Length: 122
Image (cartoon, rainbow, N blue to C red; front, side):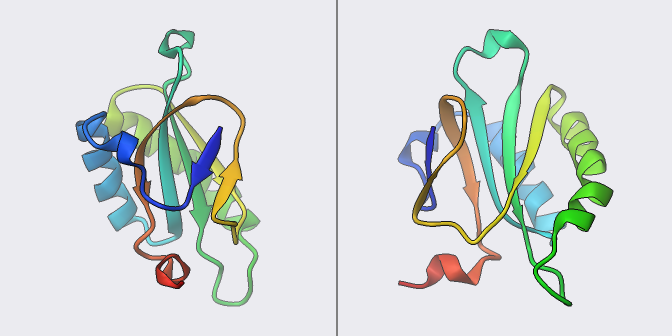
């Protein structure tokens, strides 16, 4: 599936509740630089909502693996509780090109990236 860094028009009406919850969670989780929420095609496989995040670089470098290992499972549990359902939380490394590929198909419900100043540059 191709993901664009620009906000998706396909996400307008779908998943408004999930988008609101994710927006509040993103706002309260400053370590998350970017977030994409994807509703997989063929929801009946039980995979639930797919949430892909890119972490902000640490103060002392660009290393994010330790933060992901320490916080990732707790974040996933928190999202499952808040969204009352299955959530697959994934982390990708940045920086990213204008568009990038991830495995699977679906509809982008939310794209959150107001913390990433590079998203506002030409």
